[in-house]
Amino acid sequence: MFRIYLDTCAWGRPFDEHSQMRIKEESEAFFQILHELDAGRVAIIGSVVLEDEVTRIKNGEKREAVSKLIEWSISEKVVDIPSLYAEIKKLGLKTRDSAHLACAIYGRAEYFITVDDAILRRKDEIKKFNITVLSPVEFIKFIREAE
Image (cartoon, rainbow, N blue to C red; front, side):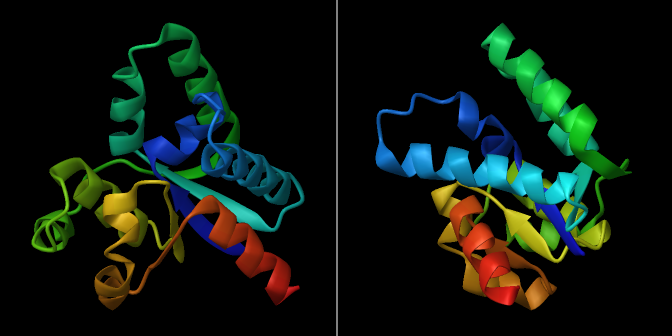
């Protein structure tokens, strides 16, 4: 079973405008991840950071939909922000992105799934924290190849 953490932008991707091919592909991959969850091949870790960010989504319908998906999908939740986030932040990431990563690491996620380019660009640097950063499309490709 793969232990994964999806950040807020990954959870919200299916509710973004699908006029760009990248957004459409990432949305489809997100739903494939949920299928993997339903099949028992992934466990999704959540956190207080994720819950807080979801409450900040301005679009009420999107906020409600994302909230329900998370409620249905999360198998474990990290309830405190680990102090590790300060060290991760030194990589040049935003505070909330660093907090997401720290929660994922603390929750023993093997993979951090995001559509955030700033995080994806630093995936090699983040690897030193023993977590692999992938886009939803990359993750689905990876698990298909592992089968």
